[in-house]
Image 1 (cartoon, helix red, strand yellow):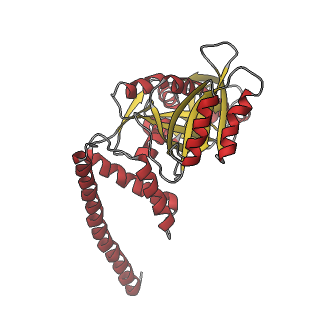
Image 2: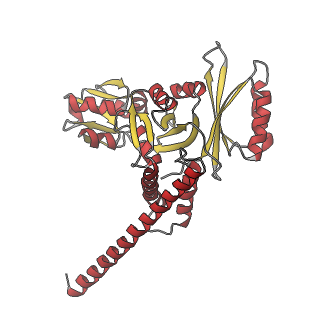
Image 3: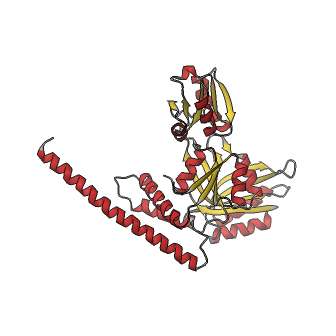
Length: 364
């Protein structure tokens, strides 16, 4: 390298060092502001309300709007997510329950939403996740609610109907399934472990690549990785986080049948979120058993100009051959048009439960 290039390189590195020093000061200055906000909230009697989903969503949207590159919007949002997570932990680290063990896609979704400064509490089942937050042992829950390939997660829907917890956020996570194993090649695999949904998401690939391998559903992808790490001749379908945590090699990557395979998770807490400017509202309703009743339930949304983004039917657990409907609509329940539609819906529905209003997921 020429002397001229060495000088140019040294100057660029010196500039980075100077910028880093400025960043350290600015980051700590931001943290001190966050501490001051916590003190103000405590004086107002809001000391227990550490996390404001609507405020966080507004900050991330504003960052993306102001980004001029070269960092992508997603990378910059990830940096600020971790910064906000660290600042929140100065007030009180948030505890988050998710479907364990460690290394699941649910853990990835929880970390994406809350950042790595939160305290994560893996649970054995979706029921346990709900109970952990309902009992006050965790602040928030992150639960899968639907997959773009395999549809709704029935147990989550059933528990939403029975629980007093509110939906206060959502996470949309692109799911990439990998074949993980201690073996050197797929030819040595006789058994594949994974969650039933993941096995279904990779059904066609397994038919082509491992037609003779036994497929064994287990409670989670991370549990599958644990088994694959302990048993010769086995493999797991799971994500990169599981491969890293359990020391497995990726024999084949991105083996899901649908390239846009995505899972949506809901964030649950004791209260929902305030308006952020771009929100959803989730609810459960049932129609009276008469002709045209479902049309009557949907009409208030159309009449108020409220867009529906999801309509999912599920058998009512208390009555044979009757159904409840899980609905997502655009807007916050405090928005005038949404409030009007919900008031009219309450008059028409045999049953109505508003699960919560929350910011639309900020993609990363």
